[in-house]
Length: 286
Length: 307
Image (cartoon, rainbow over all chains, first blue to last red; front, side, top):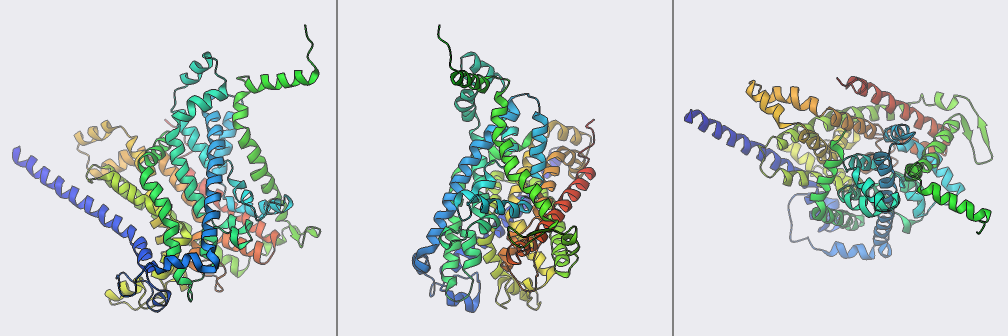
C-alpha cells in the first residue's frame, strides 16, 4: 500500500515536471519574435540588409541610436501615426464600451417584446464577415463627407456586436434584485444602471477595454480605406505600407515595431489578472 | 389651476415614456437598432444592388444582371479562393486542437504556475499583426542566413524561398496565426473546462476511467458550447483573413501568392475601381462563411434539442 502510493507520487511528480517543462518551452518559443524584434532594433539598417535577422547579440554594432531615428524620420511622422492610433483607440474603446454595455444590459436585465429577436440578430451579426460591408460603407462616408476623419474610422465600431454579447452574458450573472431594490428607493432605471450596475460590471469593462484596444490598435483594412492623408495614418498603415524594408527604412522599422508593442504589453501586465478573470467570467455562461 | 401648453404636455409625455419601465429596455437597446440600420442593413442592401451593377462613377450606373458574378470565373479569383480555403482549413484544424491540448494540460493541475503561463501565452495577441509580420517576413526570408533557413541547414536541408510558394507560404501564415491566437483560445477553453463539475471526474476515476477516456467522455462534451464558439469565430476569421497576408506579402504582390478573397475584393474595389465586381466577391464570401458555419453547427449538434 505504502509502496504503491510512493510510486504514484513519483510518477505524478514526473508528469508535473514534463507538463511544466512543455509549457515553459512553449512560452519561450512564443517570446522569440519579441527577442528578434528587440535585437534587430539595436542594429544599423545596413547590418540588417546584409545579414537579416539573427539571434546573436553583437555589442559592436548595437546601440539605441535607431530609436533617435524615429524622431527624425520624415520629420517625425512615426509619432504622428502613433498619435492617430492612440486617438482612434481611445475614442473607439470609450464609445464602444458605453453603448454596447447599455445594450447588453438591456438585453439581459429586462424581459420585453422582441428581446429574443434582437439577441438573435446580435448573434447573426457576429457571424457576418464585416469586410464585405466596407465598400458600401465607404461610399456612405463619401456622401457624408467623413472620409479621412477619425470619426469615419470609428463609425463601424460604435456598438460592436461581440461586446453586446459579452456584456449580456456578464449581466445575466448579476442579481436582478438590485434593480427592484433601487427602484423602490426612487431611483430611475437609468440611474440604477449608471450608479449601481456599472460598478458591478467593472471586470467586464476591463476585459472589453483590452479586447477593444487590441482590435483598434491592430486594425488595418478599414483605416486604410478611410484615411488618405499621411499624417493621419495609423501605425499598421504606416508600418505596413509606407515603410518598406529596404535601404535606411530598417533603421526605423524595427524600433518602430518595438515601440508599437511595448505600451500595450505594459498595460496588459498591470491589468492581466482582472482581464483574464473578466474574460473568463463572461464566456462561461451559455 | 393652470393649463399646460401643448409643447409642455408633449415634453412631459416624452419624459413619462422615457421613464416608463415598459419602454425603458427599448431605450437601452436603441443604440444597437440605429447602428444596425445604418452600419449593417443599409450597406448590405446597397452591396447586393451594386453586385448587379456596373458603376463607372456616381452618375453612370448600369444594371448588368449576373455579369459581375460570371466574371468571377477567372484565374486570379480561383487562386484567391484556393489560398483562402487552404488557410481557413488549417486555421480551423490547428487553432481548435492545439489550444485545446494546452488548456487541458494547464487545467489538469499537473502544471506549476498555470496562471503565469496563461498570461504569457496571451501576450502575442496584444501585438499588431502588421508589426510582428515584419519579423515573420524576415525570419522566413530568402536569405540563406534567415533564421528559418538556418534551422533547415541544421538538419542538412537546402534553404527555401518560404514566401514564394503557396504551401510554405500557408505554413508561415498558420504559424503567425497560431502564434497570435493560441493564448486567446486557451483562455476560452479553460473557462469552459472550469465550469465542468469536479465530481464528474472523481466519479469517472472511481469507475477506472483513464485520462484519455475522461477527456473524451467528460471534458469534450462539457466544453461543447465553448468549442462551437471557438470554431465559429475561427471559420469567420479564416475566410475573412486579410491583414496576415498583407503582413507577409504587402498589398499588391504581382504573383498573387497569399492573396485572399478579401484581398481580391480590395484589389477590385480600390485598385481596379470595379465596385460591382468587388460587391459580388463580398457576397460570395458571405455565402461561403454562412454555409461552412451552418454545416459546422449542424455537425456539432448546435441545433439539437438538449436532453
